Length: 214
Image 1 (spheres, one colour):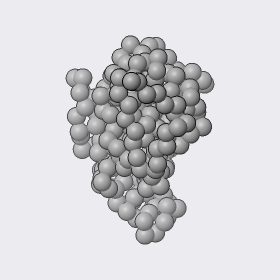
Image 2 (tube, rainbow, N blue to C red):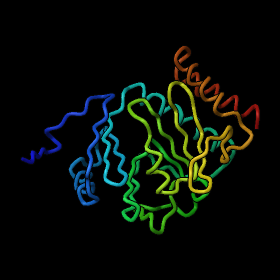
Image 3 (cartoon, rainbow, N blue to C red):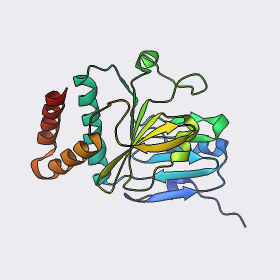
Image 4 (tube, helix red, strand yellow):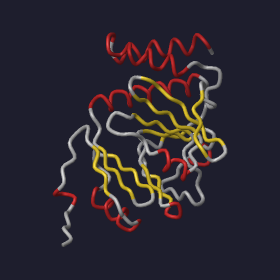
């Protein structure tokens, strides 16, 4: 006997991850439509496996602050960028779809100005993606399929930087987007500072630090 459920019958509590298997691409598209755009959950799909994650407050605070730090770096270094947030990136041919916690077009920013709809068959993937792994592990396979060149993952109080090299992700010490800056160490320290001095103070001091070394 096959039992079917509607999505509105399933509750995913903060901090939990629901995994669904043997999901076709058409099913994935239908689930996205039913979930709608105005929701707190994040989805990741790769070759038949769908994850629906509900972030914790801890996740959201880290995401917002790291996002602010990236924007400060981009502005202080006078790099052009286009924000695409948690846009759903889909590539049917690769059976891959994912919603990052945040993402930026930097090297390809000029190509993305004014874009309202994305087609990864002709549009580039985001240049930099942020993932906060509090609820579950990031599906690197989906990002590999989409050929995202740089991915930052924050997990267990530490920042990790991965770059795409020869078809696989390699962890590196410095970001190719912000070369020669010790971001893994400094971003981690400024996130810790936010727990004692507050988010506003951490943000201001991070800007001061960037200005002092650039």
